[in-house]
Image (cartoon, rainbow, N blue to C red; front, side, top):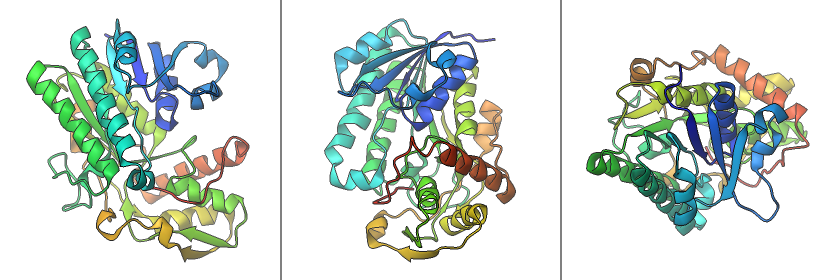
Length: 335
């Protein structure tokens, strides 16, 4: 039974946001979705949802950096999911101020409006990048946060604003830290679509960065189901919760699984432009899952390498089926 009916999703036009909106509609919520305004009239991935789903979403074009716009959107909502953020790590090295404007100021605008409107739940979507390279495995929510890139620093700052609004004004804020999400609709700048795209283009050499870093790869449908669990979860105000699998796999292992699907080996060439500055590189990420299991009664479907392979194959098949929708961009990637 849903105790809350009206839900606002920011960043709804993106990879994870579109999957979340799709799930919420199926769960019978009244969904309003903020899509970043642009001159092309595009609502991102929301435009590609099935008509029966899209018709049930109230799509609002705008920008969370605009305080008045945000105030109007938050009115009469029960729950806010804040997914709006600039996420490309390489781009954050070049355009840091835009990350501050969107990820910090945008979050502030939402918190301020939510406080005034007495929002019942504010669920802020952060990132495992706030941890930096793991100092201890598995990474618990008590692990220190280290801004190893301008992107991660902006997300740490946004988290601190959320914590301050919870402690100062009793705003019911919950912070979720998803680990490395993958699946259909992900930008081809991300590592998994980057590898898939190069195989689809029949390249003779696989252009990648470091192959040794490990990541906790979580499937997008599992991730948004964890988000959904927060809506009616009890006692989560003020909590920070990891959303991950508890397993880590290197980029090399992921590339080998994708190679097996296509049935061919491609020589890997390491490109300097795909490597982060030395002190900015995050070498290991692996989530502790104890808190998500205890508080949300949630667990990822990826519990082994075999499970990862199944989800990677599903992802590859989506890209093959929808290759006309995807712009394969091998200039850079982020992980």
